[in-house]
Image 1 (spheres, rainbow, N blue to C red):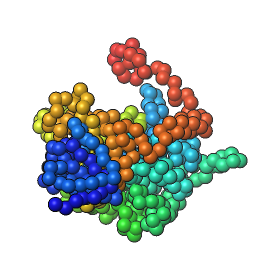
Image 2: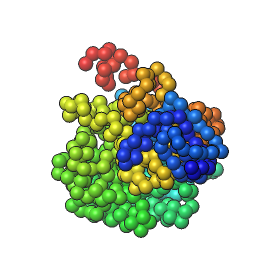
Image 3: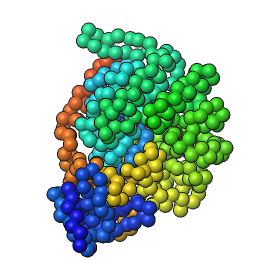
Image 4: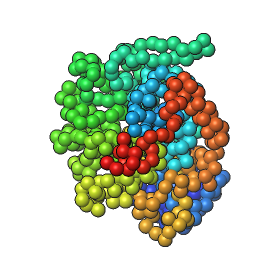
Length: 480
């Protein structure tokens, strides 16, 4: 019998592999050598020796979760502009474009990466702002530094923000602050600079860059000629550096993009896809474009994402958080239940999106959406060892059995006990090894206060009218 000599062994747990056979293995064994998995299967009859052993008895072992849509910056503006009369998007733009510094982006990246890590997200996409701030590569580099310090995988989205042009940006230095105008051409040039540096291997092995215009297919405020130029440049940059396109799209945008550009296809991810037509569903299926559905996002209130018809048409749909603000977190497990509830209500069918499909949509389907299904998204020999262990010994997890149902319906991010990325144990027994949590939180609080001072948004912290008793804004007595 061959002896497996490895660096790390996980024994005794229930393995939810999400492999091609969708095996669920009781009393399983997972062996890791270097940064990759070397064995996944029953422990019985296997001879092994490991430098480190993690006992997972009574726990569930599964691939690390993949959050394919979120926003850098949101971690330090949570809830600002969220009260009646406030404007979340206006606050976000004011902070990101006129009140942020390198320290802000670095501290926020550390905080958000830590939050994702503790929720079992081993790879996450982060658009650089609510819409990307791309007047200077320093903001992207500071974000990357922050994520690298925590250790999870990051997909950074950079590209042109929404019009109008030019956009006013503010940069801070020792002598004060300086305002400048950001043009579309400058934004495209900085986007390409960042993509070039990534292609040269300067951002680390766990960092991927996506070309991410804030939106495609929507000419509003830009004009057809400028929109065509922007889209052509986005497609050119992505093609030249072998990168994915990852962006937002809403009502009518898919058909417009299909008619006027070559931006759709299997190397493009479209977040939200709310209010889209049946014709647009067919376009997505025919082009092989991926959809990222964020069931907790406010976009779903403004327009419906037809996730079930999209899946039935053969479109690959991944679930994501759109985190972490203003009113949501990076807990990807929560999105499983939210998606199930809202689509079962909408379809008047309590059987749509069964538990296994929900788990697939944050593991192997998400990996496929970002072109990484050969490396992550399932527990298989040869794949990168991105693994999480869920504590199944909590009251809400009992009685034991039906582990896939438990993952989809009752598991929370705080049930994640251990997180491994590329064979490196980043968290064990809820204790983070890779970074000092208190230091991350302290720096985040400091930068939050500094940002409030730069932006003059301290008044947004006042939880006044509209918080209590009201059903709708202006209805403070609870009557409409």
